[in-house]
Amino acid sequence: MRFALQENLAKRLIFIDGLSRCGKSMLTNIIPSLDRVEHIQFITLIEKIVPGVALGVIDPNFARSMMRTMLNENVYDMRIGRTLNLRIDDQSGVLNFKNPSLYFKRLAEAAGDSVVEDLRRSDIFFPFQTHELMVNLDALLKLQLDFYMIAMFRHPVDN
Image 1: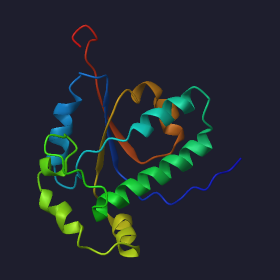
Image 2: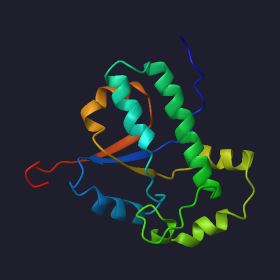
Image 3: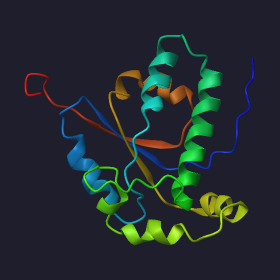
């Protein structure tokens, strides 16, 4: 069965990956402070779809289409400020970003085709904190995403 495969607008993804308590939070504060990097995001569904593909319970073609749609929506929404997290104590709160005014400025910009064109030309990186995608790397590769992965390792006893 074939599923629709939209254009990939969510280019240059960065997965900051590892077990809980391995040090990811430290990196998720450092990476977005670099030039051309958006604020950190968390999408739990990524962590459900990839193991589903690895276990054979989710069709890889469906997963590829679903992930592409979900990530395209995420970067588009981030670009127009649709889903701003304004919680001060939240790691993914935009008030904790190096330049929170960027996201407030985007609220006043027009949505639509100009945003899509901007994403097509963009060289911005989109970081996501994930938990143990690396263990299912073969399944993740089947989804044909444009990503980099920083995998954090720490001895389980230290956790």
